[in-house]
Amino acid sequence: MEYQNILFSVEDGIGMLTINRPKALNALNAATVAEMKDCVEKVAVNSDIKVLVITGSGDKSFVAGADIKEMATKNPAEGRAWGIFGQNVFTEIEKLPQPVIAAINGFALGGGCELSCACDFRYASENAKFGQPEVGLGITPGFGGTQRLTRVVGRGYAKELIYTGGMIDAQEAHRIGLVNKVVPQAELMDVVMKVAKKIAKNAPVAVQMSKAAINNGVNCDVVTGISYEAEVFGLCFATADQKEGMGAFVEKRKPAFTGK
Image (cartoon, rainbow, N blue to C red; front, side, top):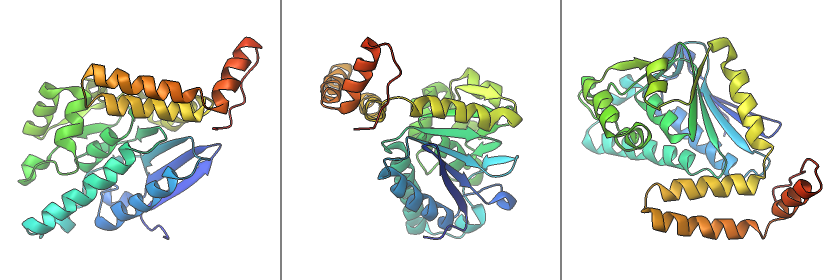
């Protein structure tokens, strides 16, 4: 697929997916979500990509929401189908084997906030704004916002954001746990790339199994979760990276992981 609405590149094991509709503040229309789906599915099977970063083009917006003009005339069946389509793509992002970092460089509203919550964690620029304004448009969040935002920040903050339809700034987002770090906009990508490279230097299978254990565990009781953890912990001992990592530690050298 030739992309018209996103940009994608890979460098040093880091994939960069950029929503590229700056004139529309990177709003998500159907074509953009379809391109994201294609890109994410290719990332999932590319072992050369150790980490994926998702951001928006320009200096104003990460993703300002879904394309309202495109949604305005939908009937109930079409609205439901659009919601399911977006949810499925965001779930594919959430379930990617590789860690996914959201680099939030401006507005993260509606579908943009929902997209950020599908990522493993979020870094934001000082000018970033977050919100779920859907109730002001007569709809609910439809791309997973009622579920993922709640899991990220807790019921109280999620309900307040969704019920009021208001916006919060980056510092408040940091205070409630929606973002991990806030940095000046000019430094955002450098800071994100630094942490992405730090992740990429570790054993890829171990990182991916850790992600799977966390994601599976948050949706079950702790006993079931630690049972799953024991399984992936044991599987790591079947990898060449485990032998290399522990061997390098004993020999007091840096490991050279291969992802096998």
